[in-house]
Length: 72
Image (cartoon, rainbow, N blue to C red; front, side, top):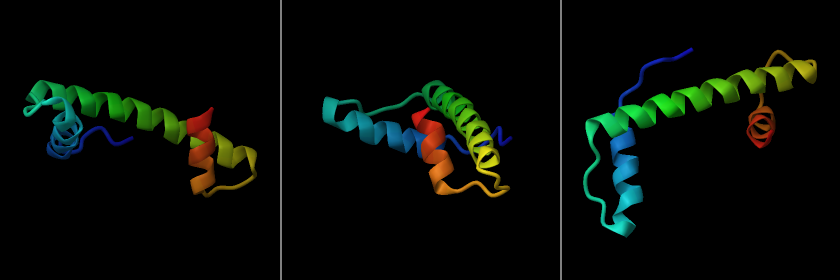
């Protein structure tokens, strides 16, 4: 599974989320930790989506599979 992607978009997301409460800066370590947590979550969602598609007798993961995997 993918283990790396840029942290800069996550810094931007965190800054935008923090604006309403006055947070202006995001540390590099915070952005890296957010990336690690999102990778863990996405790995689990991907694996669960595969299981849902397999249960439905398909080899293609569909949007609905991901929705079901997240709700689970």
